[in-house]
Image (tube, rainbow, N blue to C red; front, side):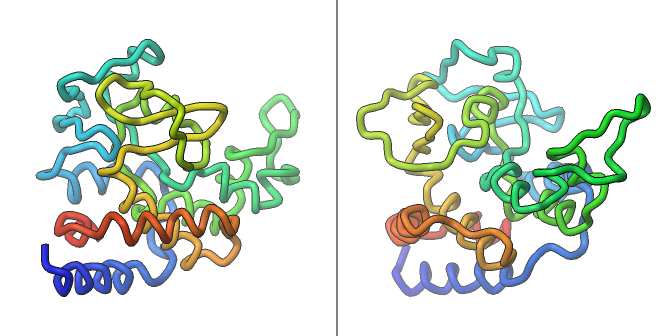
Length: 221
């Protein structure tokens, strides 16, 4: 792809994603829209390049394997690239609970469930489709809420899919790094309550430059 085309696509993506989600406050609705309107003719997962059908059933790529979360490996799940916990903890309802966060037995609760119940801003962030990508369920589960970094000494946890998880850190395959970087940069730009560390921002800026936007990423945006 020519450099001028890459630059134009990058500009288009960041123009499309220049402001926060203010329309969809339902995580379930966001997932349905992605399944039926965005990925209806591009059913490929972010990390491992697996294909999936309309019922979310995965056809694993050659060489993919996992010994953990085997049942979840059969279907895709919608992955928060920037984990919900990472931005969720900026909300007091997540950290401390709220007077409305009491269950039927009178017991208080906090965390994601409380933030989702009482805070509209959190619901918008959680449902932001720019931050949601399809992933094999087992990959989503093992990645959990771990931050991305480089893990040169680690081995892949998924056979020939080069997704590495080690000591609560994750290194994604090269094919996913540009999309991941631009997602992190978007979330930080769109939502002022979320901020990356200096090291994380440097890594994402580097991945953004090393792995330019492609046509599908622009279409998706």
